[in-house]
Image 1 (spheres, rainbow, N blue to C red):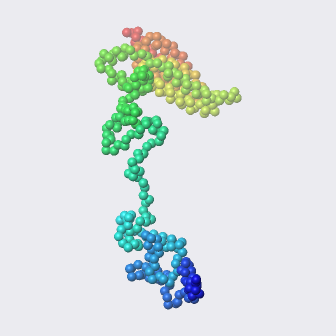
Image 2: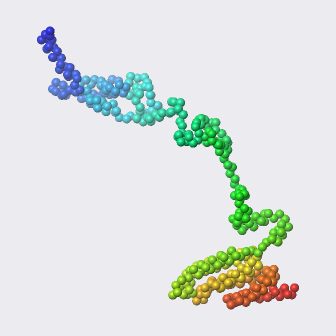
Image 3: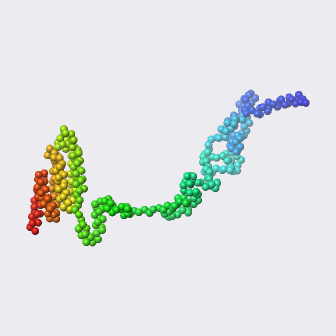
Length: 381
């Protein structure tokens, strides 16, 4: 049976136990700080006997320990976390952090298992920590083979061997690197015929090819006996094409004249192109000294020039007269240098044409005189 004295003693202990369970004391007259007592901030910032501040954070146990701090209330758990974070302190040395902790009694100078803020997150090396071999995708394994190749150290690769043969996957054929050939394709392409390959060469290349294959004088004489008369059909087609461009540039309306100044202004560009083509073709035959082909070309080109428009203005017909003069000079050079090598039939046909051409250009009669002298020299012989 409990006595009244025991009951009073138990009730007297209740306030003390409740006071110990509280997180913070409510300021009352009993626990208020006197003016002479130091503040909590002064206690924290005051150095202690160990050389540090009054408040010390222990990272090992995550508990805030205070020295000589008995009058301040206990902080809340959130404030403990904030205090534990603290400010980032830059390391003064470049030594690696101690992972397992070293000697010391804790604190900032003691060993800690916490990671430094400036330390990179460690990566996991699968090949070192485990015996698993990294494989490629399932599609590639099904295509190339069933088993991936064994990893081979880089020191065992041979640069010379890899340059010649290479095996992509076990079970696949060895790919051989083809040898590059710097020779022209015409020398290595045996499928193409020789005439088709010669068509792609320029005129200078053909001349050099023929001259390099002439070993003796007899070979040159044999080629001379086989030389044909140059074909001027391609030159004739190009000249007719230039003439058609002149007529296409003329106005097509029946109300406009095709020989006045307005029509000439539209066709002047094509007239100059026609003159350029005529000059280049005649010079080509003249430089090659094919006098018979030059006479045939003059016969064809004279008719083509005579069919060009005859403009009303005398100044606009300057291009027409220049073309006639060029053909007359080419014909005179062919008669002078060709002579009797042109043949009796060609000379008689040329004489008839020259008398008709004198109606278009009177200065062509000088070619008639040169032709008469050539025929007279033949009769005297």
